[in-house]
View 1 (tube, helix red, strand yellow):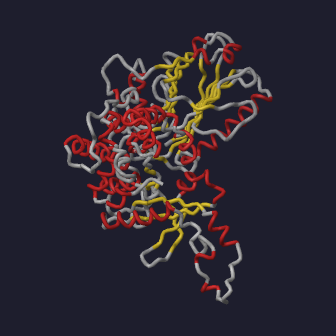
View 2 (cartoon, rainbow, N blue to C red):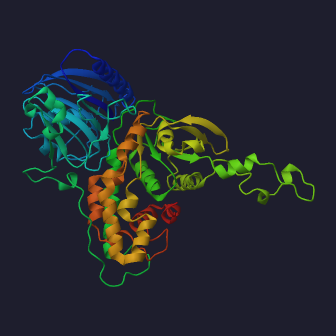
View 3 (tube, rainbow, N blue to C red):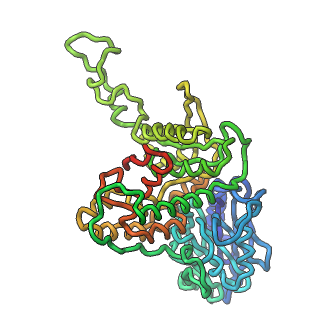
Length: 534
């Protein structure tokens, strides 16, 4: 995980606008330093054009998660080429455990005449800015699903500056940041800019959107989100649980292998930043107690040393009904009673713990199931309590990791997770038919309706606010990884016939995400396999 601030401005005398611009850049640098607390630096450059002289500035911060030691950014070695990289390469480019993926990518880009051909072959979440000196082109992009944030302010007559950044600090007068679309590689051709006025008025016209395609065969799973298999079932689909039927059993084996590999790639070889031992985890799971996060926790357990714990970050919001009940005076009955004798029905919710909400209760149940299935692992169930007014900030508090853990004697102590890598189960509902709207679509239009709804979800993945989530979580110096959103897993699940993934003729808690429920049951996570989505 890294923070990026790449800016371009016209050369000229200092003015109020320029002073404001440099103040904004200083603020952006400080904000993006939160994303990468291990190293920060800035490289200044001059960008030629056929018109005005352009001044460039490349800033990057580093959160050390790959390689033996911190690799400084921005990368700059060969002929003035500069790379600001915020991402993880999990496949498509060989990166040894001791190596840094950003450095390996930089070397590959510098040796390529067409950077797009290199980028088309890598899988993982990313956002980057790459300046190629030989062609005087600037490339910037997000991965096809948009798992990492990248924002851009395009130049205007009043604010003739280009700013590309991982995060921005709200709105600044005259500066309008928008999300970089993940639909291709954006390429700015500076040689087409002919005048100072054209820099502001024609900058967008100088951008070419390059498709993620190459002239040589590549793993297209890494290039585009594939269309859904729209083949409809032939004949009647039985309303029974059949994990041993031939097509389902094969799909179950394949999903087990692919999801396990996806988790393995995302939890192996994370550098140690704290002493290894009780209380220090390198990996945490955003944990509601649902089937998605429980399966990911189980798979992470398979690939991490038993000497270190796994943190399960469980966020609970104040229950406003309980708070209202607690603030009211106790009702008196005709018969005199002491306070201790007041029955619960006098005030619904009164007497319940303020944070005993559904996600907290299911989380407690599921951590006990994990402890039964994997007794040799220390599972830190981190209870993170959040005031009701902060409902929109769930990811911020979860990634901050400040809460409490309770021991077997029921004693609660403050605890802050040190894990820098957070696993999220996002994507499974969209890919496996886990939302109630999928069942409604089936009720209205049968299998055809379900296929169409799943295709909509697949198409909408790049617009699922993953960039926003990245900005929130990274402000705490943490990185989220999404095993279900590996493009290999996405392509595999998209290729399956719909009736293999979900069967809405079965009851809720069985037919939705049926294939994943069968996987959980195979793992021994029986409670999780029956868990209904809340």
